[in-house]
Length: 334
Ligand SMILES: Nc1nc2c(ncn2[C@@H]2O[C@H](COP(=O)(O)OP(=O)(O)OP(=O)(O)O)[C@@H](O)[C@H]2O)c(=O)[nH]1
Ligand SMILES: [Mg+2]
Image (cartoon, rainbow, N blue to C red; front, side):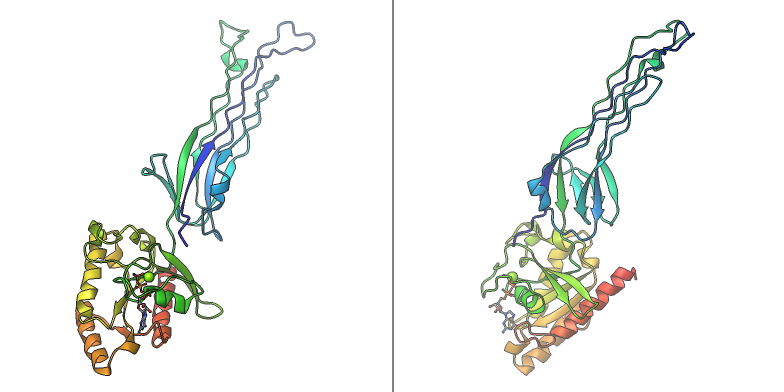
């Protein structure tokens, strides 16, 4: 599955309503003054972050969003009605970029957050506005101002709670497949995973989180080596990283440092995130290798290392518990 996380949309706000020329006509008043009202404001186009959506797929089918023109003014100083806004409901985490696809206009990173992406035009003045001491019967009224219109990009950075990182072949996709309903491709060659994959991990009736599997990183990824670091954007908002290291390779500490170096090279706070380190493929290691490699890895990362096997499931519940606890702490704001 490739992430549908970008969509281009055209938005056009409503033009303002027109002002009018009108004069008061009443019995016994010979020269009624000007009383043409102003036009109403055109509708805005608004983007709003709502919960329960997780793709921008709907915007592939409906690309154009137009708000209506404001009502025209009327005699007796009546202002035209303002038009309703058109609201684009987008998933939480959607960013709004200008047509250049780079300039960030808004980041809708919390439910309920909204922003006007095209402003409706103001109504034009009616002739009542142009009355002066020297011109008591102005015949001037203005058309409404045009509503803004433009092309915009919507971009959704996947919001996974936990992100899997590691060298190619570390067993990331195997792990994701073992703990969620996701069915990522798994194979014994590097760069099997070409696009990020998401899975929902359900621990029990009340605890669940979203886990992202991203393509393997290699030395120099932050400079473009391998598939590069372009998928790391998908883990930028994760609460925690699960760093998997293939226990069947000779130097797990070196593998650990390689990935940490790439995360640091990428920046964006990835190395500041809580990290859970797991030595994977425990089933394929001798007891001696397990012990010595866990030790070497603990020295390299300076923390406890979990010993797991995505293939047999050994140690996997403990890894999930550690992830869920870290995510819960993050959600509480600890
Ligand atoms: N023995 C053993 N083999 C495993 C385990 N986990 C994964 N493998 C094998 O390791 C190889 C790579 O697994 P993947 O899950 O595709 O690894 P990946 O980290 O997603 O690799 P990329 O997508 O290339 O980055 C496959 O042949 C898996 O069957 C494990 O726990 N034990
Ligand atoms: Mg993979």
